[in-house]
Image (cartoon, rainbow, N blue to C red; front, side):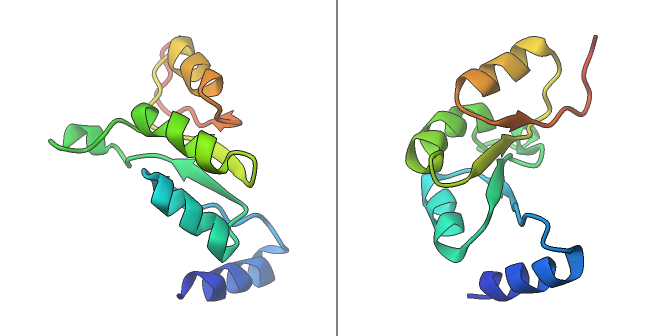
Length: 104
């Protein structure tokens, strides 16, 4: 219920830059992001793979793209370490892949 206010405030102070929350891991959350007016989402577990029980973001990506990929911009950010990680995320439907600790 506070997200629409946050989006409006962000747009006002940022010069209308896109509002894209990070940490989306479920289709339900992605649909809610569409519903409240987010411009895009970052599928990420915030390095939660280090915690037992957290799902891998790559496992969530394909279903999220199938559910809302035609309605918003979907980015992927989950500790990608090489070109194969980037290629997999793009092949599963991400439009953009954030790279942090890339080994070249």
